[in-house]
Image (cartoon, rainbow, N blue to C red):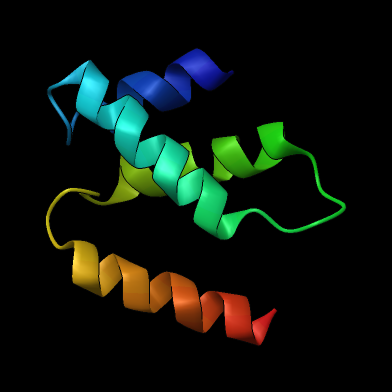
Length: 71
């Protein structure tokens, strides 16, 4: 469930507003055409649960660009 993903992501980001801002930006960057937006948002929250999204925006941006090129 998405609520479990959100609570997992809150382990790294204490501010819910910041989590929403980071998740919306990441969802926009990682979304692929012809896929559901909900699935992309869930994927973002899974990534946020595993690593700190606010730690280094330059590193995560390079990673997302590399992943988009590979797809």
